[in-house]
Length: 188
Image (tube, rainbow, N blue to C red):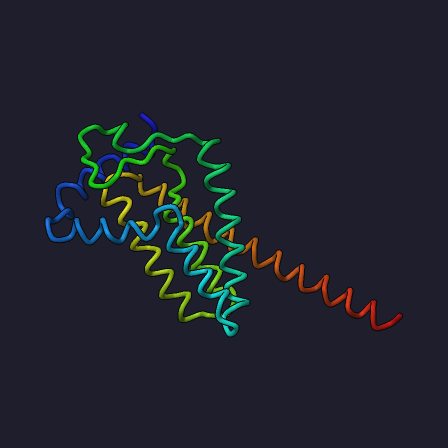
């Protein structure tokens, strides 16, 4: 057995026995839907892009989300190919739709953290913090519902933040290039 599974398997089973509640499960099932296919986050980014005051933040969040989609879904999930926890631990009951892709990293968590970090790094600190907390709850919902290992969620959060950081660096570089080009035109 993989050493990490020796910790994570019992942790997931402990959550199943001790934290799952009849009243909490439907709430977690709704919360997890906010990460389905990135639809909520795409809509959120479009909303930011449509409002002139938030357009720059919308660009940062959109670029973070797009980069995250490439890194998480096109690359990491396919390269790593980690099995889902309910496959490794059949005694774990899944309380949501069974995903068809690999487990690492959590795409729901990665997309959520990419947008939260993109918003935060764009200067909307308070909104970013609220989105970080919401992203953490989405990540926990994936563990609670039995479709991700805790390390999948932690990995998703890290990947999401790194994608936002990469997007921020790209935006900064593009801005510097644009300023240099404008200065060059003025000199001629």
